[in-house]
Amino acid sequence: MQSRFPGLDRFDQAILRELSHNGRVSVSDLSRVIGLSKSPTQARLKRLETEGIIQGYRALIDPIRLGLDHVAFVEVKLTDTREVALAAFNAAVVQVSEIEEVHMLASHFDYLLKVRCRSMSDFRAVLGEKISSLPHVSSTSTYMSMQTVKDDGGLGPM
Image (cartoon, rainbow, N blue to C red; front, side, top):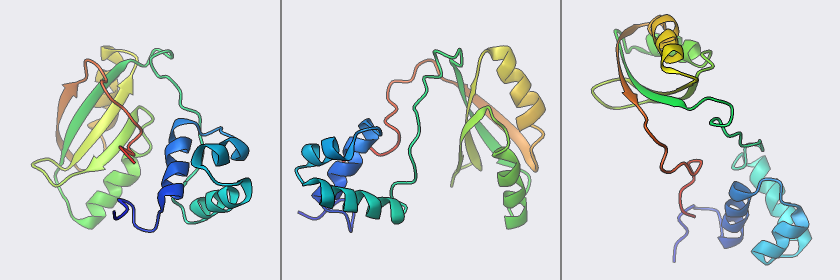
């Protein structure tokens, strides 16, 4: 059976799967979980980091416990989609702290933003004062999230 991820064998995939669930696992425990001794596990881990497959480690913070339970998805249409306009929008949108994710799409709109705030009034301010004033924004449409059913960090099944 061919690997879903070219260049990664079952041990590499097992390392990634375990780290996606427990980024603080020790190399000794990781080696036990994947079924290799410590030295080859450590070498594989280092290679995955060096190749940029593992980009870093961070704490997963529960935004709900911080009172950031208002999530909206915003479609953004631009007035101009030439490279210089896209670059200007991209540079500006990453500066808005309330925007968690930014995706350029091939659709009837240009970008989809995931925005997280404390309340509807906070969201209205972010939309009106920050998002609407980003370079080349012509219009927006908003969809309010009622509940997150699944958020696996983007890796999906391995």
